[in-house]
Length: 371
Ligand code: UD1
Image (tube, rainbow, N blue to C red; front, top):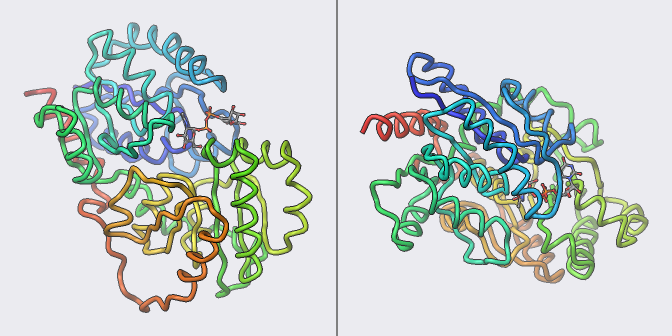
């Protein structure tokens, strides 16, 4: 039996860990999984809703760390996680993605001599002003097994001098959750609840990167683009707590209320959000995961950043990097909405984004464990 602590901390972790824990449950003679939640995200809408929607079991341990500066948050996770590792003595710690909890738990485990598997290894934006880029670089240095979602990630790791024996291309585990939940999401009434007319086009927006929402000028530029796009079709904007706070802090709330077609709503759960974006004519986002989910479903996506750590979504998928200039966003949105989409043509999905990545992750851990 291989005992694995699976770490979750923030919203984008839950849909990556759920398929892994489920597969470990199915292979209960080989794996003994535990789930540790660091508590980086703690609002019901940022955390509990995802456990329910994804069928993720309640965490075995909740560290209750919460928000703070990067140093405070990372250090608090480390301090709380160390005794859990010492007490549980796992064979492996599995971390996913690039949030502060990912790096904190990888660092604790590596120092205690516990092997680390990193899911979604090797992604690089080459932009070290992004906190996630620092987390990715360091987590990949520490991990014993680097499980990559796309071949460009393998190349990035090899170029950093990481031995090929540590790297395993397994595909994209988020897409396991997406394909599994797509059917269930049809039962969500979110489109009707938001008053979106059946069959009519709408756009969906998400924004939460500090570089976009902590700077009043950048946020104003993006909002003015959204107001202009709203003249053409309804724009639904489920906003992260950081974004909601800054919209009111910068005094933009009244302006958004006046924008008739721009609907600012609270963050949505996994199934409601899937139902919403899967029917959208256009998605605008600064998220990493949503670039991948729209590619898997063939929905046009504009990324409101200057770079992406997921180039495969641009090369093979539906994603375009458009930055934060209002005119550039509006022009790209107009072009995307005017383009006639060939009816019924299946989306071009990158290799191994097939819904079976969790099984390959377990196989890779087992092989490495025994090898
Ligand atoms: C984190 C991740 C980011 C990920 C994002 C997804 C890092 C460095 N960043 O960013 O990569 O894309 O999650 O959502 O780990 N807050 C709440 N309720 C919560 C959580 C946060 O109100 O449940 C507010 C707090 O004001 C907090 C702020 O959001 O200070 C930022 O939270 P934090 O976890 O530090 O980073 P995110 O911006 O959520």
